Image (tube, rainbow, N blue to C red; front, side, top):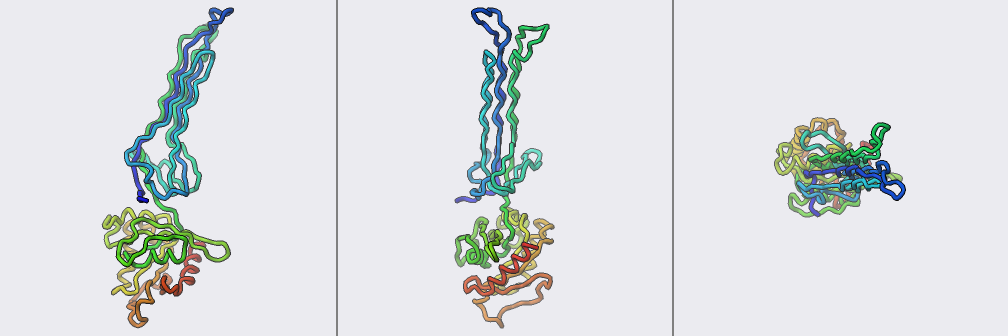
Length: 325
C-alpha cells in the first residue's frame, strides 16, 4: 500500500432544484390555483473518519468530487427529490483546510466522525408559495441555490501516544515489532521504513498505548532533507517522545542533541514533551566499549536489546508511566 499523507481535492455540493410554476387544471376546476412544488435540496459533501484507513491514497490529487443536485419541483405541489449526499472517507488524524485561505475546516480525531464540508443549495420555492390575497395566480418561482464549492488541502497526522525518534537503522522498527502488534518491514540497511507504522502496546491490566514508528531522520530533517518535514508532522500529536540511538554510535550524546534539535526546529512545542532515551542493540557491544559521554540528566536512559528482550519490560513501564502522567 502506498502511503500518502497529503493531497489536494476540489469539492462541489449539489445545487438546489428549481421551483415549479404550475396551475390546477381539473375537470371541475378549469382555472384552479397555483400548484407548483418546491425544488429539492442539493446533496452535501460529507467527510467521515474511518479508523480502518491509514493513508489518503484513495483521494487522487486534484480530483473533483461532486454531489447530486436536487430535482426540480413539479405540478400538483410535488416537492422535488433531495440530492444524495456525497460521502468521502478519510483516516483518523486528517486535517481538512481551505486551500485558498489555509483556514482549518475540521480536524478528525475520532472514529466515525461526520462533518459537512460543503453544503448543498436549498431548493427554490414553487409558485404555490407566492399566492397572496392580491395575487391568486402568481407566475413566479425561485431557482435553486448554488451548492458550495471549495478547494481543499488534506493533511494526515497519525494519532499516537508515543513517537519513536531516531536515525535510520537505529532499531525502531525492531522495537515496535517486539512490543506491539505492528509488523513493519525490517532489514539491516538504512531507510527500510518509508512510512509511519502504528502499533498497540499492551501493559498492566488491560491497558495499552499506541506507538508510532516514523521513518528515520537525518540531520537537516526539519528543513526537508530526506523528506524529514513530511515525516516529522506525524509526531506532532504524540504525548511522549522515545529517542532510540544505536549503542554502536561513535557519539551518542551528539546523536541525541542532533535529533532533539531537529524536533525543536520543526516545532518548538515538541521540546516540552516528556522524553525517554533508549540505547539500542546493547547485545552487539561490550559494556566497556559503550561510549556514553555526558548525557542529559533530566530524562531516563535505558539500555535495551530488542533481539534478546533485555530491559524491554522496564522500558515499556517507563513509557507507560509518562503516557499516564
